[in-house]
Image 1 (cartoon, one colour):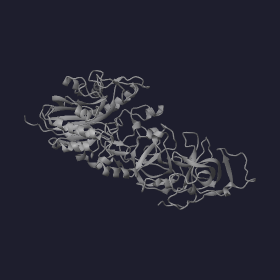
Image 2 (cartoon, one colour; image 1 turned 60 degrees about the vertical axis):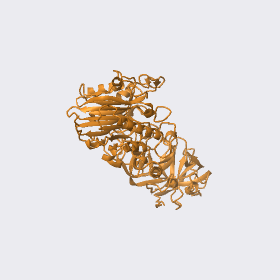
Image 3 (cartoon, one colour; image 1 turned 135 degrees about the horizontal axis):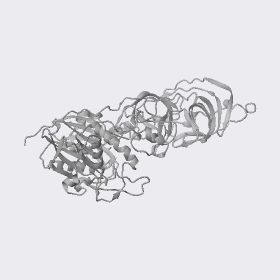
Image 4 (tube, one colour; image 1 turned 90 degrees about the vertical axis):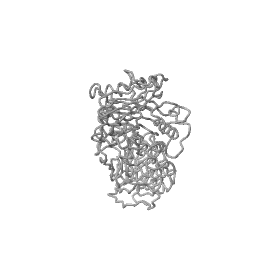
Length: 640
């Protein structure tokens, strides 16, 4: 049930003015014809009806107060919203309606009481009346109707379509992926969790997904412009910039705006209910910093710091724009393929400083990375480039990397995907020992499918220089949920390729149990992107093989490193063998990426020239879409 509030007319003019085709008449005809403001009309609620489409069609006349004005040429909405002075008292019918002019008209102002005549219909699922004539009959005021999340049913907002609404509760920023492209943010009552992050796949996950679907609303700007400049939604009622961000977990209280149902500027944004405070009667949105940027990397203690980090396609080879030639290869010896990451040298010159800033801020001694260009280990390789830049930012010789091909005397030992995993380390702290091991056989890489899916796994033992204690680091990147595999999505919440990831997890555990490094050391730390949330089958399989989910142990169910479709969880892990677990001094997630809008990254596309500069800083924020995981180890030397 919605609460209908009283409406007070501030004043009613004694004469009225009629417009047609968006133009004001030159003369007043009230002395020749009946006053249109006194004529009968069809109530908005009767036009809207109680269904998902209008109850009446054809030519209609109706009357209401202008509650939001979006007149003007495209990308404006080219019209305005009206709401009945007095509603019909039926909570199933809306008292608001969009008036479409479809011209450059500037006919009304917010607060005008108008009578409109036109053709009623639907556009993109939104009810509207396409005018003919508009008559200004005075001014009025409308109080917003309170709406709360979660909604009682999937179609609950239909009763408020086109009306002035208020969300009185504190709402949380749970998605900002399309902030830069379409000027929109998704809000919810509390940050939404990925179902399979907290409950088992299948019925429990589907039930939680259904509840999540009722607990979100899109906050949208006042136009259908793509790549808006400025981007209106950031903290403190100021535009978004590199220094004034909008982070997941920030809050909005008392949001007031008109409830629309359209896409956000392009079919890619999708039709949905949206609250537009800009241009609305009493429209208001104040985004409050509730999730500050971390001032430093997590404190995890220990004598050795290990970091797992997704680099989001660190390539120093480019196809360029437009992409007409494939300049990259799948491995050194593989076929040509599209490059990823930066499209140009100019973009890369913005990407690598952010990457170096993030790594140096975490002070790792050993670093396992995902998504680096698979182009060997030579002087021009992406991995050598990164190490050179890290050494330039610290001191010569501070950093080195594991040359897997040289160690194994094998070309493309890490496979022939476009990207691979890799390891970097500080020689002053640790020394690689034993066999450099690569799990690149078909059972693991294909995961039982008809083609290669998972990236080859890398394991390397390290000896701590000061103590002589050793441990094994293993880095993985399993197949993504959005990729095609032989078996279709099972519909249980785990996405595509779930069985491929399970098969890979079992093969990985068996391989690690076989002592692939030849050191006999049982202390194994697994990091990387497993493309599986905490309650999904691949992680369960690794736990069944004796590995502990160290992120869950240290941080609990509220941990996150990744957001997709407005729902939070983690795909990035630190898992430890039974013997390693008591030697773990701490685990933390460095929230520099997932909380930050993607438009703050290094890319220059989909941005105006001014925003290319104002949204960029050579700092650690939004270098990737995954947050790094930091692990502290206090290792015990084992007598040999």
